[in-house]
Length: 352
Image (cartoon, rainbow, N blue to C red; front, top):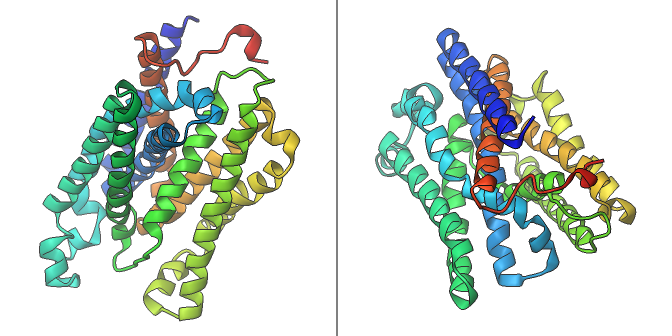
């Protein structure tokens, strides 16, 4: 099958999977909306994380950014697609978020100034539009202009990621709060983008910079493990009933299984494997680590969001992750054929 045929097949499969989510919405709109949100945040992490890596590389340089550029640049260029994928979330706000269902449970000043539907939509649109603009202009800005844009873009990203991560994740089970959650989402997006890049980067097996990519993946995984562990430790030591209730709601199956999968696949196994230099420096074993890590991140996103609507949200979440993924792969493949850096740029001898 030709590359164009593969893209069309991926697009058709993605649309079919998302139609399955629509079918679930007929039976249980809240559960389907929650599943859609899981798929949205998972792929948003990969695309936005790719943009973050581009901005970091523009300021720091290095061979690691050059060998993953054929993945990160078309992935970042697909960020505008998130504007379309966010529309069902905006429509489903009354069914998804407790502050929209029971406004009397939220402090009046918080409700009027922050947790309300117009403000939620505006913040999300500002974030997605800003990231889209950065993804468009950064590859076209050279030299000092590009470095300045990357620096300003990282400052914008640091501010906006803290806001929308609270909106998209935490406010679905208000009043749970975490001052480190924005940093957790930001670093997880770097992990997701690096894992995605290890799967597709068209580098030869003897490329020295592969080891740098593997080391960066290890460092970011260790970073997110530390931040999340400290957040849990603070809640446990602080004996905070409001936060503890959030964990109690996840103290039974299938949430304990999802938590275990998220830790094992997203942290423990990748860390132990990446500590071995022969894995970090070889493309094919690094690709397997990337796949395992992404599965762990998907499990973590489901663990964070799905319990708000129960087990019924999990089938929709699986369909949303698969459907959005196939559509995004189709779009990035189209961008590659249109002249953007190619996602599938390897030759037959590279795929073994």
